[in-house]
Structure formats: C-alpha cells, structure tokens
Length: 316
Ligand SMILES: C[S@@+](CC[C@H](N)C(=O)[O-])C[C@H]1O[C@@H](n2cnc3c(N)ncnc32)[C@H](O)[C@@H]1O
Image (cartoon, rainbow, N blue to C red; front, side, top):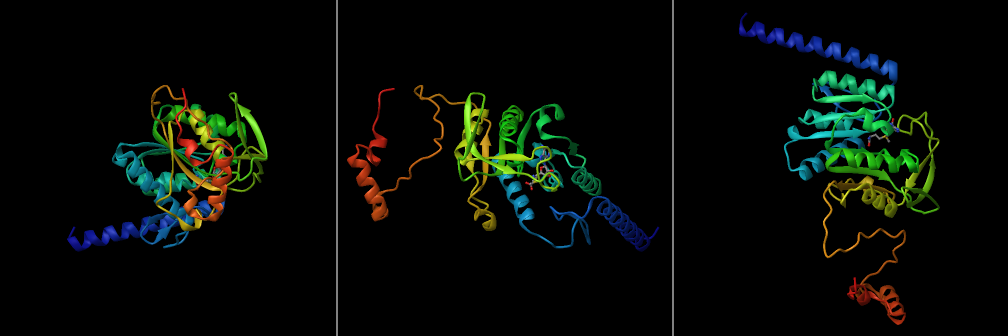
C-alpha cells in the first residue's frame, strides 16, 4: 500500500468511526434524553451536546482538576479517585482521561448509560462506573482512595444519611476529600448523630428530577458550622475553603461551599482540646474599620470582654 493509500484508508476509518459514534450517541439520547450536564468532546467534530459549548459545569470540572493536581502533588496516573453522585460523570471522565484511576458511583440509569458510552468512546480503561446508592458506598467499593469527590451530593441526603456518608468516606480517604455542597443559612432544625447535634434546614426534593435525591422526599442542608463540625467528627483533621480557582457566578452564592477536607493524623499540642464551631459567632473587627466596629468594641470592653480579652492566656 502506498503512503497516499494508507492515509486515505485511515481517513475512511476515522469517518466510519465518527458515523458509528454519532449513531450510538443518538441512540443513547433517544433512550435517555439529551446530555444535560457536561459537554464532552468525543472525537473531532462530535461532542455529547454540541461542539464548543461550555458553561458552569465545564468551569467546575476545570476547577476540580486543578485542585486535585495542586493538592495531591502527584502525577494523576498515580492517583486513585472516587467520585460520588457522578451524574454523567463529567469529573470522573476528565480525571480518567488525564490518567487517574477513577471509580464513579451514580444511581440513575440514564446518567450511567451516558457515562458508560463516553468511557467506551474515549477508551478510558481506568474508569469504572458503578451503579448504586452512595449509602452503600462501603460495599460498592473495595479499597481506599487517595481522593474522594463528594460534589453536589451531600445536600440531596437526609441528615442521618449525610452524617453516615461522611463517616464512611473518611474511612475510604487516604489524602483528602472535596465536598462541594449547598449549606443552610438558618438553623431552624436540628438532629443528633453519634451524640452530636447538627443544625440546618429541611429541603424538599423532587426525586423525578435528574439531579435530585433518589430516595428521600426531604433532604437536609447543614449550616456551615454544622458541616465543618461533621467533617471534624468524621475524622477529617483540617478543612480548607476553596477560593481559587474562582467561578464568579458560583462565588455569588452565599449558600454554596467547596471544602477540601484532609484525612490526616491528629496533632497533639500541650494537650489542647479540639474546639467545635459554635453555630453563631458574633462578628468582630478592629475598631479602625469604622464607627460600627468601634462602638461594638466599646460595648464589649465595658462588659469585660473585647478583642484584647480573646488573647488572654487561661489555666489549662
Ligand atoms: C446535583 S447532581 C451533582 C452531579 C455532580 N456530582 C456534580 O457535582 O455536578 C447529584 C447527582 O447525585 C445523584 N444522586 C443523588 N442521590 C444519590 C444517591 N443516594 N446515590 C447515588 N447517586 C445519587 C443524582 O442522580 C445526580 O446525578
């Protein structure tokens, strides 16, 4: 075969593959509806949604990949990652495409079918899609993961379920977990788990929606302090708030957080106790910030408190 013939044969093969892929994608759309989450390039000229379309979902994928790369400090090919409530597996697919071993858990048939199709189309041998309920995570997966992604999921569980999941996840995490979730801005309801009280608000779920809870009519959104306390109670030793990379449209939400929770070993220093986040911390600022803060500081001082009193040493 001449070089020209070989090039032509390769072109024909590529064109045939594109036609087959498009037909397969259209079959999935006919059976499960169009892709609603992530626009993923499948081949030159073919994407899950439409060529060149990007939005919040793609910005979130980029941000999480950056975070994983930065904080793991290891090549992706050396990482084992768990992605929970994976939806169409946009995060899992991109991490696997870059070489990580990824297990994605998702309950809904349609999302799983779409994720399986993209896995095949891109030849992602290191990606496993597991259909199941995240409540059963410890029986769905067999060993620990360097990184656990719990993105857009926790607020679709009831309070007890959210607590149980975080405790399960801590046992599965070697380096860190990323928890991106809605939080409650009010502490109108509470419940107890393992002797601790957590606050927040119930949130109704429409289980027929593709991004919603699969098994509860009412989920529970934890307050920020309660979520931070839960992460500590589960055994995550420090928690960072992901400020950059910023997604301005997402940053506008006061009730949305992305926490990175480290699965470390506890440090002891002078026998100091572990503190808990109080549900309410009256805000403090240096009096130079303006009249309001100067007045608050003055009142506190008169009552025997004030900023200086926070730095006073007390007997252990
Ligand atoms: C809001 S979407 C978030 C998807 C993705 N992780 C993200 O952050 O873009 C929630 C996903 O979790 C799935 N899900 C909800 N509850 C689940 C459960 N108990 N077990 C497994 N998947 C669940 C839903 O089907 C949906 O795909």
